[in-house]
Image (cartoon, rainbow, N blue to C red; front, side, top):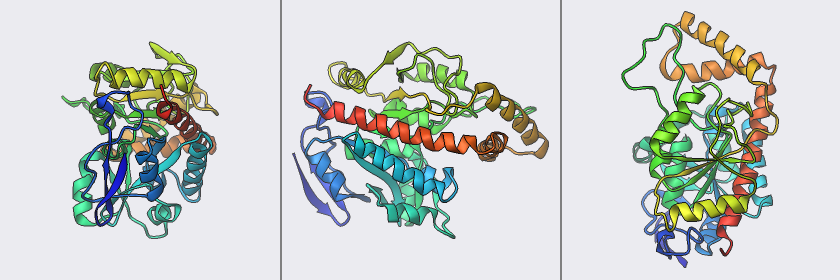
Length: 340
């Protein structure tokens, strides 16, 4: 397998696709061109069939305040490397979709005066055409990872089915994150601490089943809920090491020819009690209703409320789970790249 220059700022990776036998080891997609720029280290690892872990950049651009955002990014990259894999932070910079953004490039998303967009998968073409900067959400990072041939992505929490603000009339179509639809149609393993705690976790679990997304607990038999290691939702499948996770991925995408993504669900290493989070959310939802907070504004409103209610514990828990998920992602990627 070799990587050949194709166009300015892009590479066409030529080699064996995951569907051509041998499972996902060395899997890359053909014809990576257009607005992509793949860092040399990432390109070389993919060309050699080595382990690579994609990392989303929305946490840097929007999820954590400075300096915690860049510190979290550094810790995640280091955790991936300790596990024997190459980190590939994904971001949109000046209209280029970068796979393997440097620390300096990530700092550009978080610097003084920075106003990066928040990119879901659907936004990538428009942002590239407009020459914009953006942090990539899970859905965008999943889409880009698959296009580059990366099979494992590590993040904090995934989106899901949103809770209703009290007094808000249910919509004919539930407010569901684009993350779920993208994972459902894209063969990438997303390592996360489950749905964000501000979501309707039980409804999100039902949506995963409806969409055919395989959810596997990593050393847990209960769906974690971001800050919380317990949600009350049982998981049907569990693995206790990365090798077992890799076996499932090889079967899922290999002989079974499934095209959906897989969720590897890791409980947070520094959990916050579920009752503490739920009490904070109940109060915040009431405040949101009284203040007229609606739509996209609800999520940051609830996150800030939980951070205040926990005296900063939520932020520390967030950084810890990001680092833990990156480590598990690196372990799974390394196991997936190893000879089966």
